[in-house]
Length: 219
Image 1 (tube, helix red, strand yellow):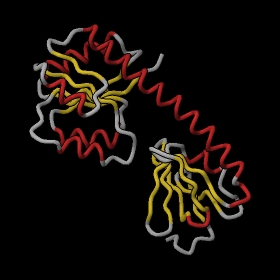
Image 2: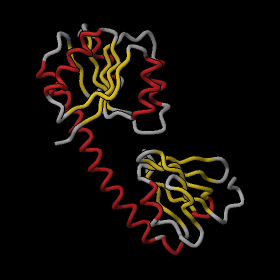
Image 3: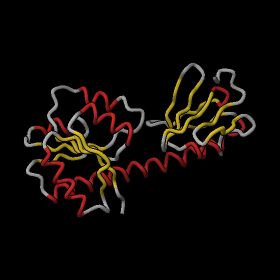
Image 4: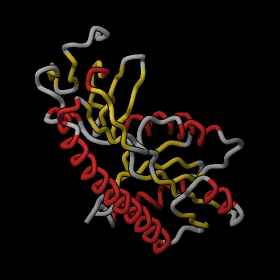
């Protein structure tokens, strides 16, 4: 069974206590990797720990939190809203929440929310697997043309290998640094690209870096 990592951003401690109790009894499906009552601290925690889901139980005076989420350079975690007010559900789904839980929180509602998170992740993974298969076909077809097919967060891009300055591991992602100060974030890890990029020109100098030895722009 899949275990999902969660971060709790809550103003009311009762929510955190309930979810901690839930996790004690259901540790096989969810783990809490961080909690805070501050939105800015929550964003920093999300950037550092990259959870699968965020449980939000906090009033929003503006859209700044969601604007900061949109600026993340990795896939935005799933969001589950928790609120005392039923009308907050409209706002929750406006921000693409996977689920909305109305207080008082019930065990069954948390289970359903987690199920929705897991199903959403599995559907995305299935799509990603299909996309990676298409990329492998493209890379095979373009091997002699000096292009590499890169799965960015929302599309597949064909990049001339000569324009790649270096590649950097970003957790389970890879960032491609291209001539012209362009950066493309790929949803595949660096190890997969080490077997695709032409070994005559690309060298893995560190477990986190592959450089293009022919690039005059590399510094």
